[in-house]
Amino acid sequence: MRSRVIFAVLFILAGAGIAVLRATPYIVDAQSPNPIEARRTQLQAELLELEAQMREQQALVDGKRTERVSLERDIAILDAEIQKARLAIRARDIEIQQLTGTIYSKEEIIAELDAKLEREKEALAQFVRKTYEIDQVSMIEIILGNRNFTDFFEELDDYEAIKAALRDSFRMVEATKQETQAEKISLESKHQEELELRRLQEMEKDSVERQEREKQRILRETRGEESRYQQMLATTERTAAEIRAELFALRDTTAIPFGEAYQLALEASRATGVRPAFILAILKQETDLGSNVGTCNRPNDPPEKSWRHIMPGPNDGHRSSRDDQTVFLRIMQELGRSPDGTPLSCPWGNGWGGAMGPSQFIPTTWASYAPRVAAALGVPLADPWNPRHAFFATAIFMQDLGAAAGTHAAEREAALRYYAGGNWNRPQNAFYGDSVMQHAAGFQRNIDILNR
Image 1 (cartoon, helix red, strand yellow):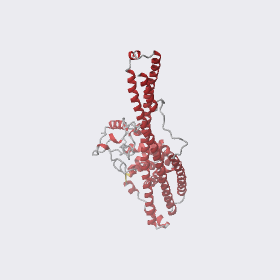
Image 2 (spheres, helix red, strand yellow):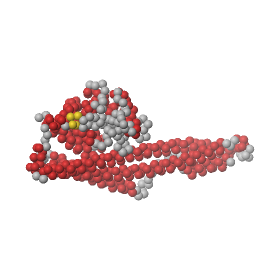
Image 3 (cartoon, helix red, strand yellow):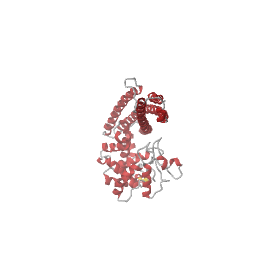
Image 4 (cartoon, one colour):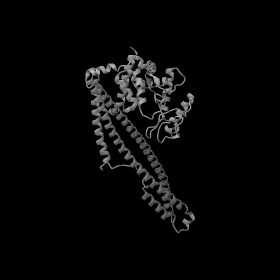
């Protein structure tokens, strides 16, 4: 009986593939045709070509900006900017296609790992049942079974080997579970990346439409004549009084007059060396991003819009490495604010929200900058909802990114690093830096008028 049971256990192990006592990764035969890889290679080549074209358009813009202001020059700049944005949209399409292929591959891997895990679990269940049957055979039964002790001890050795295999198989199941979980976390990250790319694409489309409208407005008002264009530039210059009275909209806080905003930016500039117009431009750019920012966690919002749901917490380690909830609660406690009812940014797609105040810092990032902001201001605590504190936080952040150098290139790079991190120099991200610098140019003109 014992021999038959041991043979059955060995048969189960071999049939389930557990005789190989280590996890086998999901591998695609490198020699077989792989349409996904072939398509990825093609897309990468197309992306490189688009990036080269975008660099050409950027060089054209940079060259034109050195020329005298004229209708021809400004229309040429707008045309180049529009073309560059359209190329960026096409590049973003390719990035999304590449990511879709990666997501598909990971879904296949997860499906294979899930199937493998189920096979291993079933085999182990049978393994445990058969091992239990072996354990029920007593020494007396062996002795009375008219069998010699040599056979018994050989079977006992086999049994001990099976028990060792059982321990290894449990480890194999655990390794497969961990591998599956890692792939699922990676897949979630890829889905988040896809959502972010689609959001950026919508922003780029808005940029193209805005520039097209500006171009058509200029051509309509000037009828294509240089003299009319110069006259339009002269008549659109506003007075210092008008500029001071103009409201400067800030996210999640009451709008303040431009004159006051400029003074805050000037104060932050003196402390950090970052140009006031650039500080204002970063805040302006952040103000205009997204239509749903600041519409979560308000007093009458539903529970799914509360801070408990829109930002990662201590139990979301499978989706995010951050714990913004714990840090947010600590910030609220230190400031004497209620965490419920304080406006926060809403998530975009399936991503996270929870950005705070005019400068839109997430809680964990704010916590790392708050001591420096408080020290620069000479206050015990920095408050992300205080406009003055928000200006200083933005200026310090930009100083860290190199904007204090004051050159166009340094400021543009700082804006891009703020926006895209290590991908700051990718051509398809250029629209953000260009938009910030356009805002900065407009603010600088207003500041020059104020300082006359």
